[in-house]
Every structure is written in C-alpha cells, then in structure tokens.
Image 1 (cartoon, rainbow, N blue to C red):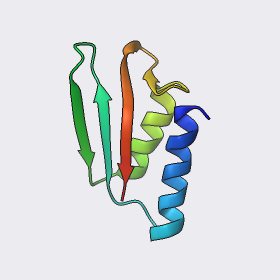
Image 2 (cartoon, one colour; image 1 turned 120 degrees about the vertical axis):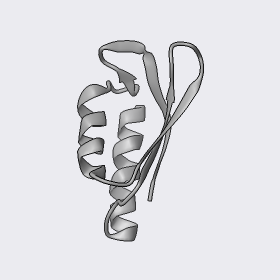
Image 3 (cartoon, helix red, strand yellow; image 1 turned 30 degrees about the horizontal axis):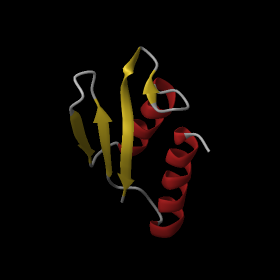
Image 4 (cartoon, rainbow, N blue to C red; image 1 turned 90 degrees about the horizontal axis):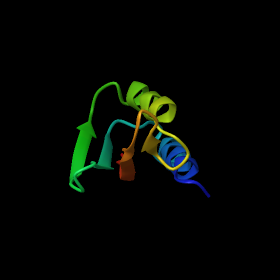
Length: 75
C-alpha cells in the first residue's frame, strides 16, 4: 500500500470513528533532513485536499521531491 493510500484510509477511519476530523498533525521531512511538525485545527478538510493534490503516492511534494510527509495524525 502506498503512503497516500494510508493517508486516505487514516482520514476516512477517523471520520468513521469520530464523525469528523477537527485536527491534523503532519510530520514533514525537509531537504535539510530536519522534520517539521505542522498542526492545523481550522479548515482541516481543505488542508487534506491540498495534501492530496500537492503530494504524490509516496507523499513527496510534487514540486520538490526532497520534501516528504513521513507521518500524520488525524483527530
């Protein structure tokens, strides 16, 4: 299973379990090797849509393959 499929499944399972997603935390590996944590508590669904469009099946940023989402948490 590709990482994007896991991302989609995690999102759908959270909606199924909680009724909605109100928070998303994403760990992004940067070109420097550092990991950045992004926390969104508003407009979560539009952020999910952005990740789906901007990142490939391995959750690498389409415009810069050195940037990759390596982990996430929906709540």
